[in-house]
Structures are given as C-alpha cells and as structure tokens.
Image (cartoon, rainbow, N blue to C red; front, side):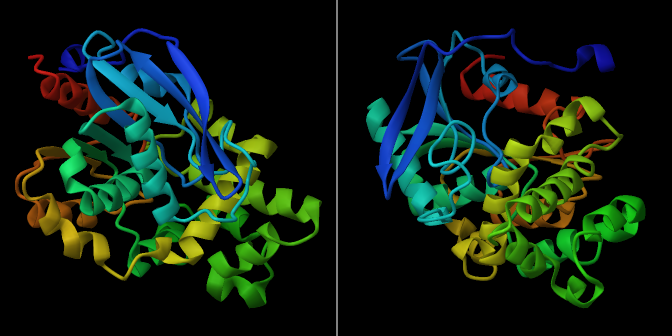
Length: 319
C-alpha cells in the first residue's frame, strides 16, 4: 500500500518573486510557481505566523498550475517582521484579494492547512464567487474549545513532558490563562524574555504536530527569529479568537455549498481535533472527506500528503 502513496512533485524554483504593498506599513512577500497562465491557485500557510517554504511549492503539478504562495503579514520575508499591528484575519482576507487582483484572475483554487484552513474558510465565506475549489487540511475553526484544548487542557494530557516545558516560562499563579500569560511576555519590553517565551511557545507546537517525533521537522521551530514571529503573531491572533464570532466559520459554511472541495484530516491530529473536521464535513456535504488513519497534523504525514496531491491533481483535471 505504501508504494501507492503519492508524494511531492520535484523541487522547483519560483518563476517570479516580489513584494506587494498591502498598506498599513506592511509589505507582503510572494512567489509564483508553475506555469504562467495555467490553473490559478493560492497557498495559505499555517501558524498564523508560519511563513512559506520550498517544500510547499511541490504540492501542485507545475505543468498544470500557476500558484501564488505568500508570507502573511509579519512573517517569513514579509515586513515589518513579527509585527502584530494592523494584522488580523480580515486584513489577511483583504490581502488575498489584492493578490488575486494582481494575478488578474476571476477565480482560483484555495489551498490551506491548519491556520491556513481557518483563513481559507474565512476568505471563501467572504468571497465565495472567487473560489473555484477548496483543498483544506487539518481543519481549525478557532472556537474557544479548540484553543483551550491546545493551550489550556487537553493536549497537555497527551504530552505531559512537553507541556511541562511549555508551562516553564509562566509562573504558577498565571497558568490558568496560558495564552494571556504568554501574550504579556511576547509583547513586553524585555527582548530576552520575549525570545524565551517565543521559543517555548513555538517548540510546543513543533513537537506535537506529527504523529511520531520528527526532529527534522520540529527543529525549525526552535530557531529564535522564526520562533519570535511565529509565537507573537499566533498568540496575537488566538488571544483575539481570530476576530471571529464564536462558531462563525461552521455557522457560515452554508456559503460554501456551491464550491467543490476536499477536507483532509489526520485521525490523531493533536492541535486540531478531528471533531471539527467532521462538523465541517456535515455542514458542507459537497466536499469530499478523508479522515486519515495513522496520521497526526502535519501535511508531510504520508497519508495526508497522498490525499493532498491527489486533490490538486484531480482539480486540475489529472487522473
């Protein structure tokens, strides 16, 4: 069976890169990959604050797709780095529209995983007429229950050793509200304390997103510059519940009713419980649903990657 699993397309360099001034002092880095004028698509990375990388370019057949990948506000190569000013879900939804207009297309396939699935849903529910198809992985609807599960009580029961390290920068008396306690440190004036908190926050995520430990994947989360942007932006978004009403993304899933899509989720996804992927499946029956056994959260888990590649192939008309 393993031999039949689909894997990444070969390594590829962008045929165009640049920066788009999106206002509010932000400049967003983007790259285009594939064949100019082929099927348009946009890739939405996770985090928030994660940034894009070369491997993500390889999720699409380069002969059949023209893909924009971009670093969302404040992360990756976008500037100013680690900025949380004028940086909300709705700023990012507007940025996606600016990129679509820059590309000069009426519709495009929207691909998002983890936080990228959250952003993809927010965008598609705001601009359904602009979305030809949706490919979603690691569904996160950003409800209070989901946030508490990962940052307060839930995943802590599965990874007590790693949870202890996550708690370490926070005094006992502040641990009843871990996100708020981290925010005070990530936005404070003490640079050393910012970095310590960022590394602990980022490492917690890096070490809990794969089914089995994968130092090659999680190691990048311990790089200080990456961790600072990742932790500051992610915490900023999550403390504010993504500027979404409670349950909004599932409530408004009816707006996706005419959009073909695929939902791909690992059975043992720790950050994003499978329950919410199942609920999205029920609210959006037009989408195919794949619950991948023996998989965690990361897109490079073999069963998840297989379904992602099959989805992008199929939506490009490739069997």
